[in-house]
Length: 162
Image (cartoon, rainbow, N blue to C red):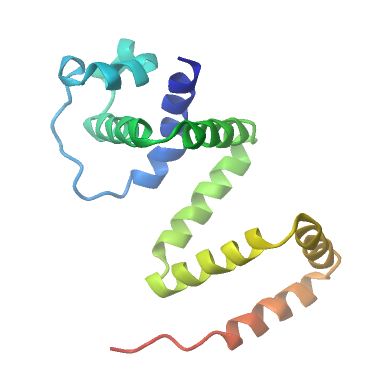
């Protein structure tokens, strides 16, 4: 029960901005009574004000409930942990992260793929290697950081032209 409530709040806090740019969002209202019993259980925190939500938000929450139903118990636990971490961030930091995500979504697919690959390489490092990398970066001056970014930018392969 707690997991479902946490998930519903996570969908609202994180899923909303992530899914907000979907073009196929229907303009029609989703009736609470038309939701399956499982979706109603997951979305129970919204039962009282479901009819006041915009159709777009109802659709996003419904999709989030669908994704939650497909998750394994481990995935649900990880989602709950991410939500707790997200919820613990100051509002300014959450807004900054939303803005950065929106910037990321504006990048070409090749650039997004490069960022995901770099993040995966970073995640694959041992904890002490990640810590050393963070420390080295934090000790750099702003000019050194910019020089590193510029150097990395120049070392990227040129985008493919069609």
